[in-house]
Length: 271
Image (cartoon, rainbow, N blue to C red; front, side):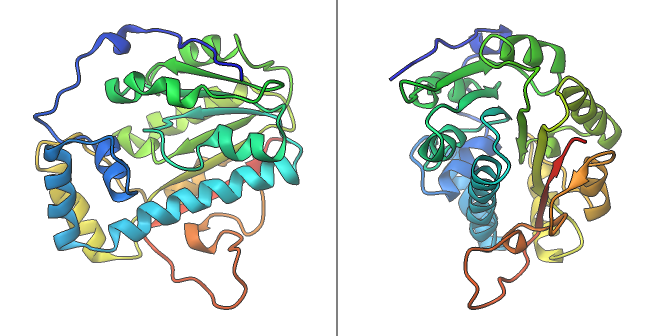
């Protein structure tokens, strides 16, 4: 088992603020995790009281990521992953899914949440022939992310960039697009981009609940339109079925068509 030390950064020295709810910890609570505090549980319960479907969205998002990683390893032959905005460790983290299929896979997890940094060792368990690493960095600093990732990954080889429920934290959509473009520009042909984020246009109740949450003083998360999420993939070759509500992206069950939720995502290849 190969454990790579975390790469420290300014954010890694922040104290964990347990007086204000944090989206990563609330998400962990909805997924059934234990790495959250009463303030997060209260905020999560208040949210579900208005919109119970958020738990389905959280779990559908996680399942979408698992199917994406499975496709990337088993069908696209990807063996390197840069997961930015990893979140708190739960079941089926990127490295677990990838190395279950291809033990030699190499994964770099990136997050700036102090609680994620505190639990980073849980993201570092690797097979003997693969590698994992954790970088404490902000999505707003792509240059640092790339420099640190290059210590574990060979960025001249095809790499999958994973941005799962992180771009909603970038308030300006043009800035979010610029971050995606900068990260993908550093990766070679044959690399892939996986993105999923909360979306507008599917469920008005969800949108009202999220808008109220953003106004509560918690760290805001901005829902995007489907067109805005699709724009992240400009210049890339979308993998079928394109950008869709996450339960509809290559569902595992063929017995019934899943119901769409207010979370859209897609996977694309860099030509």
